[in-house]
Amino acid sequence: MKKIFTIFSMIMLCVALFSENSPTISRVIEYRPAPGQHINRLFPPPDMSDTPENALKFANEKLVGNAGIIGLGAFGGYVIVGFDHSIVNVKGEYDFKALGNAFQNSAEPGIVMVCQDLNKNGKPDENEPWYELAGSDYYHPETIKNYEITYYRPEPDGQKSAIRWTDNQENEGTIKHMGSQSTMYPLWISDNTLTFKGTKLRNTAYKDGMIKLPAFDWGYVDNHSNSEDIEKTGFKIDWAVDDKGNSVDLAYIDFIKIHTGQLQEAGWLGETSTEVKGIIDLHPDAVLSSVEPTNYHEATIFVSKGVLWVKEMEVTLINLYNIQGALVKQVQNTASVSMNDLPKGVYIVEITDDMNSKYFNKVTN
Image (tube, rainbow, N blue to C red; front, side, top):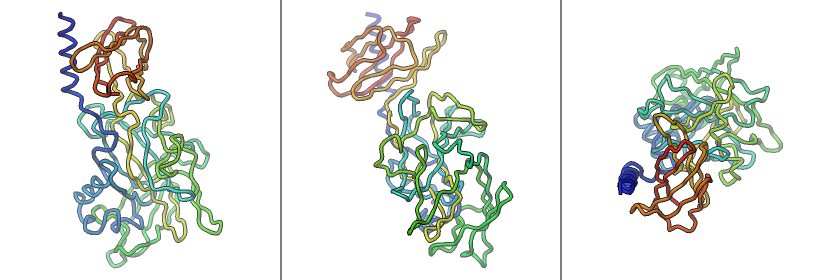
């Protein structure tokens, strides 16, 4: 009787604590684009380019729930987004998909960074490191790590002039003014200079009758059409590297940062500027679980194609309970169990590991 009460209590606790996770962006934390032809004109429109609050409101209206599109301007411009849950690293699987505005020969690749909310305060802090997801060109000899660029606000009497920039490679140049807006420098940002630092990809634009912007193989936003296979549009947390290029094993992430990855002028097309339409968590109900305090494990639990999987743990027993507390399925010495024969809904999984530790979590099929 005591065991039944314990399981029922755990079920009630899990149902109370866990609501169904949204697979899409829940909030935009920061929107800081570089100068670009659509800044202050479309991203955001003029009536929302006046204050930081309005610019952030615009970005939230467009990206929460993957409802629209924003642009990041020239190299370095970025957006930081969060979710209503941690995105779990499901080993061997693509973890999320990023949506852009690319089509054939019109790629404007954005680099993806990820961060964990280690202190659980809901925002990325200075002591919480960012890790790059190393795409297909990360190790290319022309890729520049720790590239830094500074853009300069035009003088008041020359707002429609080109935007001057200098970088840490002893180069300088301009972003050509295009568009009808008064300036391409973000109006809601009061600083007279904008500095961005990050990985810069090689330029790829060429002219073959028309100007073409070919895609990189994989691992970048706004690089392939959203309808392409997941191998072209998906991202794995396992690709994470630190600022020295060392692989990092992350069990989960909480924040995603996307920045324009090229500093490139493409004739009448203007500057290369990554456009973002959203993020899709491919395993929104995957759960990162732990057993404490003596036998600590981190396990990944997820349901894929009707099968519940447990990874990163030696499993001896899996029990599945419905929300009324009734045992509906039991398997031994296996890390997976089919749920295809069960009614759609919420279940509680009880897992016993090789140390005879037990823990519970919610799953849906």
